[in-house]
Image (cartoon, rainbow, N blue to C red; front, side, top):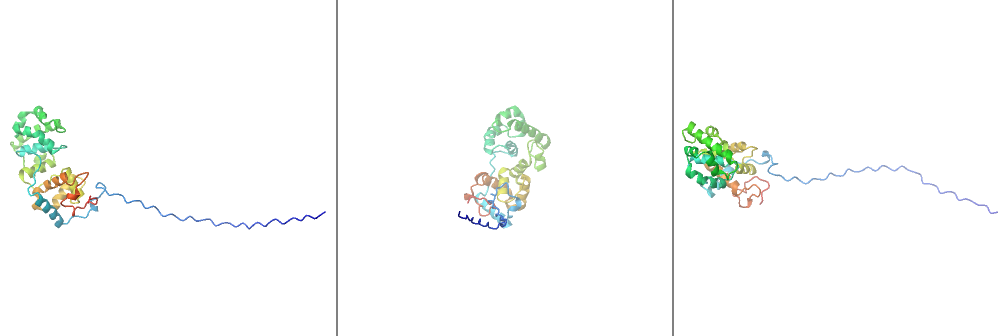
Length: 258
């Protein structure tokens, strides 16, 4: 019987411990830079204007429109006061449409009182908040008669004491009726002051005081009209017309459309 020989089992390779793989940290993804918006911009983000630049801006406004006029129609200081009070949260065009007939019959405080609140409402009912405004106009007419001899007062504090009149109303009347160097800040002036960096501020008062600080005295009589018109027709809220802007080379807004 043949002898069976067994082949030796193959040797197993020695088991060695594998080194633990060390994961290399991945570089953090760079996020896209956030788009700056007017609301997000801080006042100190903008480079301050130099006096020479401010002078240049208003020189251009003056050259383009030497005698700017307010767009609220009026015939005397009293009707101007009434028109400005009525213009709160309303357009100048809308106010003018209502006051043309009104001022033909009530252009003095006494005539306004004689008209009465109910009939006054009929004239201004196309204007927002007309009921409250009618009450204020009758009340301010009575106060102008009783406390100021029927004449519109000539100080800011006195005008602000009248029903329905605030700081902006006082500034408009002082400027347009009496030639004072005041700065009335409406939504247009507020936007232009902040967007251009000319006078950044969180409130209308901050913008007003900022503009008064930087605008040379020679331009102050017409400055608020130039800024209002610029904001109303060029520096629009949603789609500013930077391509036709007189001051686009000086404007600090980082999102100019040119």
